[in-house]
Image (cartoon, rainbow over all chains, first blue to last red; front, side):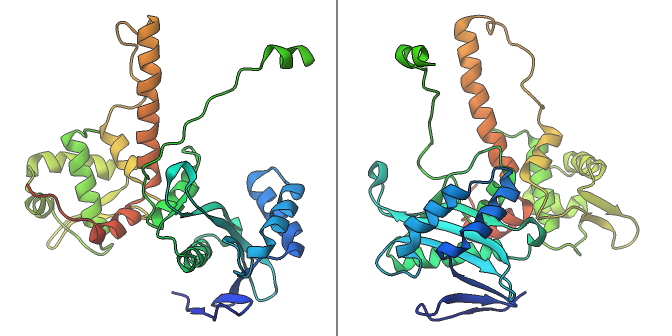
Length: 176
Length: 137
């Protein structure tokens, strides 16, 4: 078991796991994050990650925002994984809760506990923000990420996600 | 969701043995602990053995031990050994619009059940055990 050392919230580095560390992401991390996520999903989205890092920047160090973008890196600064979450209040009538939007770990270093440490770190931020529950939404065919969240203790919540395809309007069909 | 007896017994056996990879228990040991039929469990253990989830050790002190990877074996891996697989044959009435619509809803329920069982590993179940209260008989 690796020793995990929590640091003071004011430190830029949030936790140290062996030779790895967790810190808040910064705008200049965008290309590495986009490359890692693109390698995992096969769909690189550089513009999306640049925008996300920009919009989450004020919450990176916990200064006044309830948005958190944290990453894990090795002692050489190589990106190992990242997690993205925020506190949302009164969405569909729900009390404030922490939402995890994305969590990714380099496939070459999986099962080393990096995902768990990232998840714990964002949950710690949620707790500091005063919320008492964390939730996420996962494709039910994505068994790997479902298993990860289950292993962290998440269970099916009281909400069910529903969706439908929107039939194209006559005007839109005519415009094509 | 209702499980057949064999499925439930198989899950009990796997969860009991996976608690400790070094643990060896006979079908009798497990059946006494859960108050279930030893004969029925013995048949279930043979099926689990064929699937590579348990291994039988012969001789004095022998018994069954867990032979899978607890982090990679899911509840679905056990359930699918004993429960009917797939959608099943077309039932009478399903060729109608009402029957087809009912089938869509039942398929949705089945897909969610399967996703849940596929997402929960034996290791996750073992971590859940201390957090849940046992049901009164």
